[in-house]
Image (cartoon, rainbow, N blue to C red; front, side, top):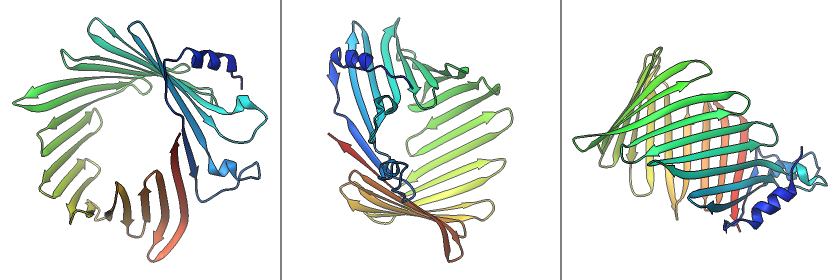
Amino acid sequence: MKFSLVAVAALVASAEAITKPSLTISVTDGSFDGADGLGVDGLNPTLTWKGSSSAGDIDIDYGIESAVRPTTDIASLPRKIFGTVKTNVAGWGVSAKGEKDLESGSTDLEVNANNEDIDLSVALTASVDGGVDSISATKNLDVDGKTLKITPRYRVADEDADVVIKYDAGDTNVELTASRDSQEVVIDHTMDKTNIKLTASADNQEVTVSQQIDDDNRIAPTINRNGDISLEWERKLGDDNTLTATLKPNESIDVEWKDDAWTAEVKAGLDGSNISGLSISTKREVLF
């Protein structure tokens, strides 16, 4: 894998604004062991560095995501290079984002154009190897003070097209996704401390009732057309820290604990009272 340190140095030298790097360290499936014998691969530390610059009416954001591990091959450390160019063209805000995965060699592109005067946006995703992947457009309409959003989408690879219609009436939101082969509607209604969400398609229907019991506790049971039930319980621990447990009888139990910059998650299969397939992961982001 080739990587030009000279190009990076030139980019740093021309930067107008450089953000502090962020370091993310995660432990997946409770494994600390790595090929290096030191456990560094198991910790999976990642360093992300971002910067920004401008040239005339063009704004540029860029960055590098790199592995952090002992190595004698510096060129093997970078994992991704990404950048976004933004400008205005005839009343349209245009942005082009590119991301190069140095491990797989793939390059993904995303182009967005937004016109605030007519409340219309267009998005295109593509890759260098596969060409255009998808095209979509979003038009917002005001209907008696409520918002109606219409988004037609087309996926080039499978020649599949659909349209997403969203209606926002404050406490009640309706989303309809329709294509030639399937349709799905989602109705979300909030009243006081209770939220009801209904999802219905030809294949499945399910309803979730989320109830805020008090300032610190929320429960949300879900039941589908087959009678399958799941239960989510969220407990606020203060300072935006939370503990969330999701139980699916005879299937799984998941527990997620967010504590400041730490996120820990425990997943396990469940068969009656027997627990199997235990998976533990932790993640922490460090801002310098």
